Image 1 (cartoon, one colour):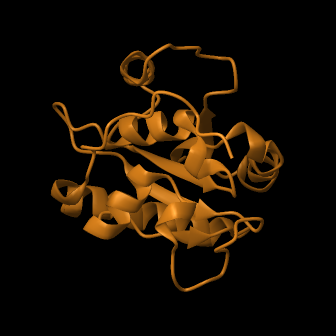
Image 2 (cartoon, one colour):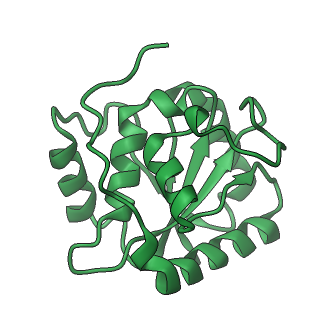
Image 3 (cartoon, one colour):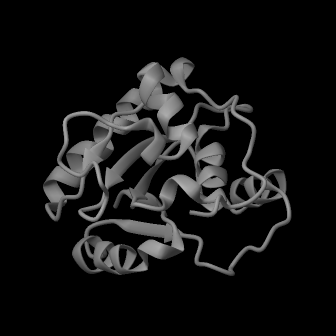
Length: 170
């Protein structure tokens, strides 16, 4: 069974539950629930994620991208943990625009509507962005593509952006 680390903003809880309803039987999903890990700094949060082995070379992060995700420090920190290269290659990432996102089903991506760290990696060619699917076969295809890209394009992963210190308010 494929291991997924599900990253999401708490404002997208409906979609996190829907993801579990649709894919819970097909994939082993791990996530950090709101309040599970309270940290003052991004560095502590990332260290905790890696110590808990929530992200490793065999895990793929599925990042649910809703209308407020770009403003979430938790999402920024989770992406930074996935892109961490110290002694390993970065984790494969499957960014998934949710149906309530302004760019859903659009060919172009407005970099201001997605997390900055994700925009950096779209620009570098390390990740591709997808729209929500409810097909386990389609998600599996995306996951295997992200694993392949992590192995072959890991050097393109960009993680130099400063960690967000707080959520941006809309």
